[in-house]
Figure 1: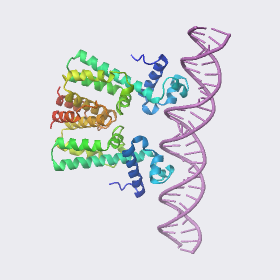
Figure 2: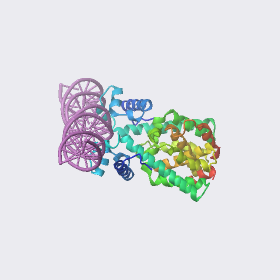
Figure 3: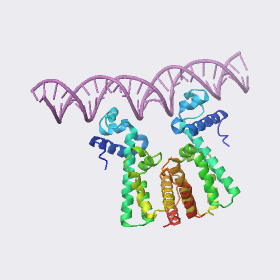
Figure 4: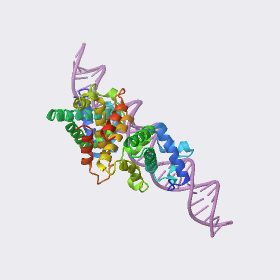
Length: 173
Length: 173
DNA sequence: GACAATGGCTAACGTCGTTAGCCACGACCC
DNA sequence: GGGTCGTGGCTAACGACGTTAGCCATTGTC
């Protein structure tokens, strides 16, 4: 995929991702990132103009992998909204820090590979047979559910599976 | 409400809120906050143990005002899920930075006034007649919709009113 | 063998949250 | 009225952050 990056830049992004997923966004620091690679922080700027550019690559990974997860769900259960939703939620909950990073700020659309955002959205659009309003409502529900889960906003004893199925049922499964 | 704070501490929280709502979280800095009050940053620590404690007060304001908005909607249209949802969305979109601050991290439950979280949740629970799963699904949809809007994640030409109504309709209005 | 590109380095700057320690003022008590 | 103490300011400074400037070794190319 990203041959818009040099091999060394890819190594940096890999390390950044490990750091983010293992320790959360507060630990994703130019200095700790450099440490993990055995170099000093200023050397990172030979490969990326700033920290934001590294984060953009992580967001691109999130979008790419989300698209892949949705496409796989579509392939094994064509037309099933429930399968799509399950794949979306599973992927997000498996990568909570990455999901938050890519989701809780405006999309850096101009800096992302062309077509990537659309690719991630297409399986849902297909399953909704082009009904844009339904697709957006569906996405909002899934995204809301997942972020509230990730941030521990529901009561500790809440039955989230039941709430999830209830929402899916109401929205057309 | 917060007489757990001294008058001076209340002034600080007021200034912090203005700063946050006017200029976003990046401008909510101990130094700029002190500036706005005509004092120096270290003086703030005579009133709050750390920045987090100031933010907790802002989160408490968010929860209180959300509860008030929902209670008002309930009073003027008892039992209407649609009215509740509208009040929730309107309030959130009117205070996007505050909403994000209070929503995109774990709730500091231990530091919030007792019962506040429950108070904010109660109108929805009443309107759902105690159906917890429905209430949670409903909340997830509203929250997801609002955060995606706030962060500009939908396409610029998306008809969000239509998506909103579609979700509300599916979820029981 | 000169030369440029590549990719490291150290030193430093400005900003952040925060701490230590000092001081002015007012309230209160004897 | 004079000592005492809490309240709420202050300056100076620390360590961590993102980032810049400028130096240097290695490598590959004509």
